[in-house]
Length: 432
Image (cartoon, rainbow, N blue to C red):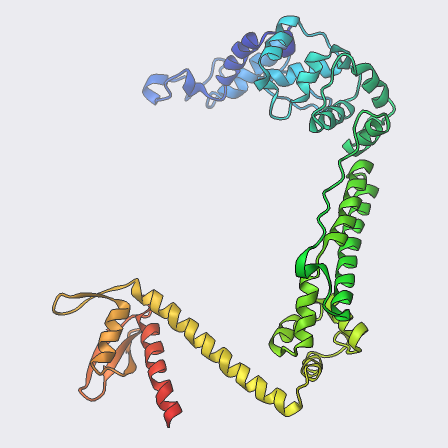
């Protein structure tokens, strides 16, 4: 009995269509009960009780007639099956089995079928010397490496490639294949990365502190890059060629790194810009460790081995603040932060309120912001709430006249009204 790779694609397509009957009978039969009749509801042809299992029947027929199921025989040593004709052809060529020219020619002329994980099939068709010459792992690794480098496998270089690959273990990795091909002169060395030296203000440090920050930062980044590359190389995830390229890039990155960040930090310290200094240094212990080490090395101030409160105190002292001046600055900063938050909340409430629509008794339609502004302009100055079952209702209230108008939390009018009234009361409190 012919196996899939011993048939043409059209012939296997006919077999595949017959196999689909077991799983997609609606492609052939009208599956309505009145049309199917007793075929799928009563005893089957072999008088077994129960529903007729058409899938099992078709699989059994395939096994008895062809010796394999609807997907064809296993194409892989691990027993995997696949209905795709090109898969069976590719693995037959890989094993070195005979495949008729009419079958291979069809795939030689139409390479679209060799996509989707079978790109190496084209090499087996084009270069017969590869068929059966290598293990699956060896061949696929060779084809991948050559394809990535955009180097063709031809009848001219195939003997040399096979001689090289026979030195590789049966379960070789792409990295090892890359190494072997590089040693043999098949693969070129990767081009050196471009080097762009820093220019302008970033080209030189503004102080010894900036120089030390830059030195520690670039050295750490270089060490991290090299540690990753060494780990990948040791695990054979990358080739020697790729490792050398990563090493050159790490060196270039260290030399091309400018002094922008280092100068920014050093100038903040030099100018005693406490706000900027706090942004850099007053954070978790593992933030900006390089800059903290530079402060210790150059200025003798330890910001690493101390509690957060002591670190903050040392930062203020470094910028020339006394304890009283620090307390005053902290109070002012807290007030400024509160004002910024209030302004942000007001803007958010305003935008949310503008999305809602309110219809007045006179038929006029306003958005939520305009509605609240109108209420406040007419003397409504307090917000009250009332129970309504398990919920609460909110109103903006005119205490002088005893009138109230509804507000809603969901559409932003409640938040906007609170923000407007709070902003209106703040100047009055300051004046008092």
